[in-house]
Amino acid sequence: MNKNVKNGLSIMLSLILAFMMIVPSFAEESEPYEYFIQPDNDLYAAFLMQTSPSGIRNGEQVVLARAALIDELIAAGGYNVLFGAGVYHDGDALCSMWSLSAIGYDQNYVDICRFYSSVPYSGTMVDPRTGEILCFDCNDPVYPDLYGPLNIPGTRTEVVESPQEGQTHISSVNINDCLYMRSLSFIGQPECTFITAVNCPSIERVDVRKCDLKNITLQPMGYEQPLAISVIGDGSVGATFYRSEMTLGVDEDVPSIFLGWYVNGQRVSGLREFCYDGDGDIYACFAGDVNNDGDLNMNDAVNISRAAIGTRDVSADELAIYDANANGHIDVSDAVIVARLGLGL
Figure 1: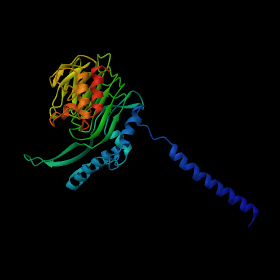
Figure 2: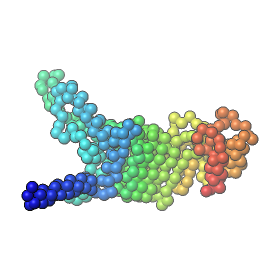
Figure 3: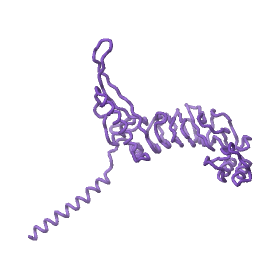
């Protein structure tokens, strides 16, 4: 073969190989289109990438729920699903589920974090009085199941609207440092155990309850320091706030014995629901105050220690009161929890 032809083929082959190496590199390193300002875009996109135990991403859950409703409408006949309703990728889910606002040209942000999407469609019906054919437009919501933590700290979001009761498997909510947040609602999500809203000076309304909340930390309008609400024992709590009034409550469907609310080791209320105007740490105790004298102290810790090593008899009915960490049995760690609370640690 001619030497020049060989050189030409070698150069061509080298270029092809180089192209094959470079193109995947571009594909891997190229940034996805940013729908919102930062950090909103990355945090909301990350939420949609979280998966269920079966491996379905939250973005896919949104798309599949919308597709199911579209299929129902098509199967029923007589409906016209409007253009744009049948999106089938996570990017469209990013925009279809949340309410958007703008602070300038191409500066979108999520102003309302909500947990439903919708499908617009039109159809016709016959007026039963006149026989006239009428046209109508509808926009039906769909409520996808969503999984994992909702972490959107520092975003420009202004409102978090609660999902439908029992809708999601969201495990926690973090809206710390959301300076524009005005309202937080999260109700009836059984997998959610933790909510934090620290440094949110614009929040004037909070409603978080009927979940499995073990820890709630709030610093809404008017609070110089956060209020940290924690559970001792097997129970769950909730909180509501409107402008200046904070109400703490124990979920009504919790069958456990409720001993009361404790601050610095002392019971401040035995009510299941009461108004509280303090900050710092407060504990909803379903366990710990084993002698029920209104104090969490070393006497309780010693009694729990004795029960843990078998030198104090505990009946089956008393077990829950001794089980401070709610792990189903009494051990030294239960005593340590109560001792630390009694000492204010």
